[in-house]
Length: 66
Image (tube, rainbow, N blue to C red; front, side):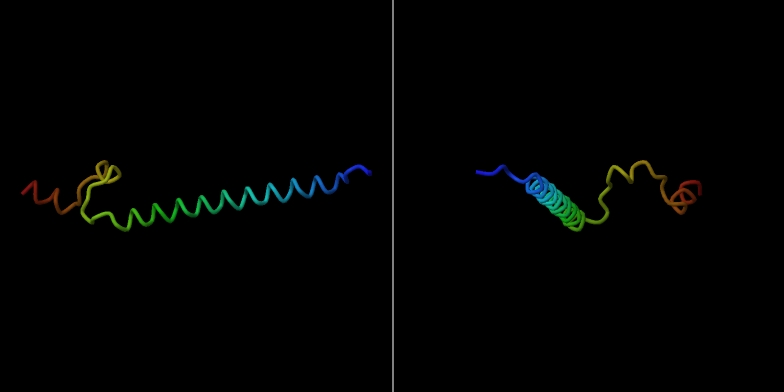
């Protein structure tokens, strides 16, 4: 019986790496889609952590001074 061809092992390794990259890409896309879906269902007017650090609109500051 002959020995295994080293090119075959290299080809299998490349195919496995490609399969793993595709799976990671699919998972990343699924995660992004879930985040978009969650953001889409967030009620408007909710104060998120990002909005708390921003200053209020200029019109609110002017009315507070008057």
